[in-house]
Every structure is written in structure tokens, then in C-alpha cells.
Length: 102
Image (cartoon, rainbow, N blue to C red):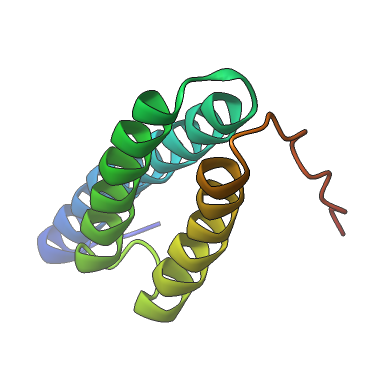
């Protein structure tokens, strides 16, 4: 438990920042899920618009320091590959299942 005033203030600041970062990360994940859903079932225009919005959100999340810039680049690259397959082939693709370790 923090005893000094500055340490108590630090705890309050960290709690606020942690909540803000969790919100940003959750919003990013939600945007990615929406994009994957649109890749599977949406029109090409919807896919392109969703990708642009998701890409912007991922960049903003990385700029705020919530995720690393390399992780942002990796996520955008993988999403771009899915979007390309959908746009080029103009067919509906099933979402890829990921193995979660943990």
C-alpha cells in the first residue's frame, strides 16, 4: 500500500491509464472482429471501408503505446492479406480459426 501522497497519486494515475488502455485494446479487437465478419459476409465496398477504419484504429493504438509498433504492423499485414483475398477473388471466405495458447 502506498503511503506518501505522491505514491498514492501514482496509483490513481496508473488505474486511470490502465482502464484507458484496456478500452483502447478492446475497441481495436472489436474493430478487427467486425472487419473479419465483413470479409466473410460483406460487400467489397464494406470490406474496404472497414479495413481503412480498422487500420487507422490499430495505428492509433500503437501510437498511444498500448501495443508495439511491430505488433500493429503485423496485425495490419495479416488483415490486408485477408482483404486482398476477398477483393481479388470476390468470393466469401470463412474466418480463420486461431489456436489460443494459455
